[in-house]
Length: 247
Image 1 (cartoon, rainbow, N blue to C red):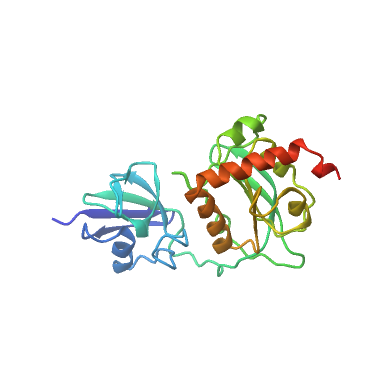
Image 2 (cartoon, rainbow, N blue to C red):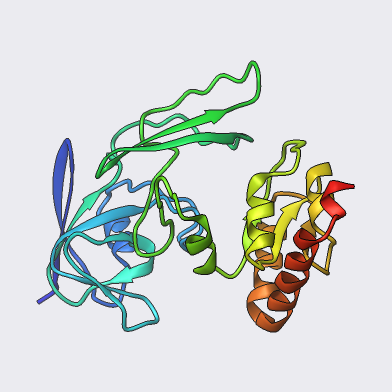
């Protein structure tokens, strides 16, 4: 007997029989459920659901996601009955997605599942949106929100690098000084304040543009060469101990 997928959302529910060798997104689309998606590779982060009953297995691994866990339907399969709650109503007509440059200037946790985000967007830019359409905080290590931190040295000791891909003409960000003082390499876009702290390839990495490709390349370079990252951090620490920033 084929396993059963129960997919529900605020305004409805549908039961689907599926093949255990196909992804849950594929099963839903075959059944005519218009689950929001665009790539079916996990890159767009749109086909989000939460397991209510049963469990799903991430394709190509032994990792399973049980009740309460968030998942991408295009990346999981199941060999038994499962119930999924969609993050978005599949019958709701959403404004077309757009990409805007924005600077986050405030982030506050109002409740365990509510976060207030304050951003600066380009002038005269009209944002047509539905609440929850643009930002999804997903657990399982994709995003970790710490809230207010009063012990930055302890937090910085728990990471391997600091990344600030700003598209604004910043001064010298305080986080750069904190990172360097903790012996961490810095990855940043090219702006005047960054060049005061970062010597490209020596104390950190300056990327040409705040695009995914440049950021990913810089992070992977340090990830694959941890000794190089540590050497950069040590030289950054020497920089903050000298008089370079005061010149």
